[in-house]
Length: 162
Image (cartoon, rainbow, N blue to C red; front, side, top):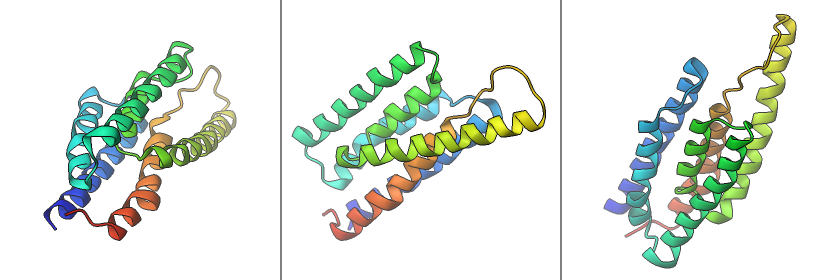
């Protein structure tokens, strides 16, 4: 019972952190390092509370996060993604089961596309010139929240930990 409460508490904390990331990205076009670090550092507590084994489960989560970092760092180097977005998605990869991560990426891409179209339309209506800064943290955080609701919460309810 205690592990189940802890799992839900940690998911709640992650949800709040994702909302903070989205709002700070809207307001300042920045996702703070302390927030990304807190998300990443809380993941092992979630693994423990959820009953993940150290090997191979936690190792797979770390591998997924490393692969995410490598791909998104490449996007950062190509100036297609911001540094805070790279760190947020990498930290989120520590929380999302590998079989659900593709869902997160697809939802993130769809939401990011919609967000980009909306910002482009808004800038066109205002006749603004130049390159627009897209707060992609909104798409990452929203996809993370949708993934948690759709994938993690039903799993925890069906298989309560210790």
